[in-house]
Image (tube, rainbow, N blue to C red; front, side, top):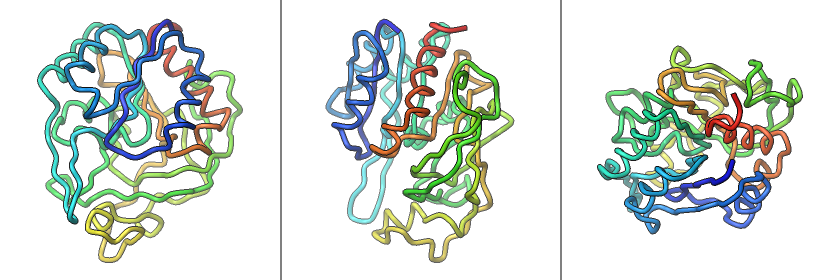
Length: 254
């Protein structure tokens, strides 16, 4: 890939190790914009120009005083992403990007899933669990997974949230950990100040798919649930998968 645009912000992460991950991807020019300081107008222009695009943002939220508010993306940003996909140029969404832009339904229709911080018409709020050690099993021969071992160990945060498997092609599944409410904590409880709590919270069993390609986006769109922190950034299999996903979605590989 000749140029890579990375969008981050809206969710804390360790910047040094993440920048080291970006440096190991083999990209040419890397532009890194952070919401909201990067500005959605700046991001919109960069989205049009970049060969490869990585969403590592969780934009559209404001947290404080035990509550959360959401907003939609700017018309310029929405138009830029829509135009990029319509032109056939794709993107990779990583980890907490599945929660971003809660008020942009089309984004989540393309992505095939959504992490919810609050209950609503969609059902209950979603679940999270840090530092889960599991076996990542490759389930598809795909440009994103080629050259990887049939399975490899990962220690990372997992999510329990709606995933529409009819709208995606599974690439990797997490084995050795049950995706049910007893193994996760409530996002709404965390917003209210009760971190690591599932008291009074119920959620139906969820998908163990942790990497996939969208079947509804007009351009290649790959989601990788990997990416909570330095241990995952340094995982050689995750690094290879991310680099291959960026090449694939930018058109560098068939």
